Image 1 (cartoon, one colour):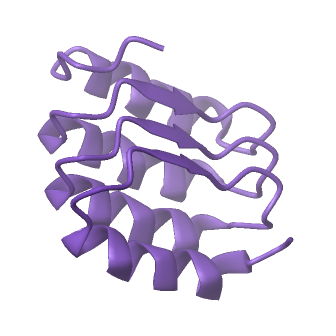
Image 2: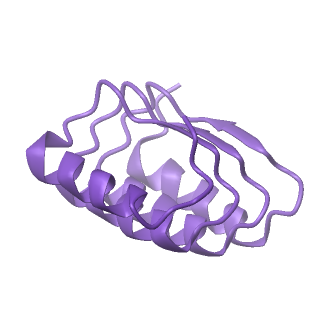
Length: 107
């Protein structure tokens, strides 16, 4: 399935109030920066998701930076998969800097 940014935004809305989902696999869904930004906003408030797989998408530096900012607030996510995206040096740097503050992400 390729849900794209619109699908990611719809899932992000649900994640805001989610109290049961712990593992979300959105690999290969053609999610770009807009979808990643929506997911990132949800990660700021979600307290149950522990695993998020975003590999094989179209997330660029802006989306990665939004996710990085969310990682500073999120206290439950332990596994985040981002390989095979287009985050570039700036996105990678933002994620690396966020990991200095995040105490729960292990993988």
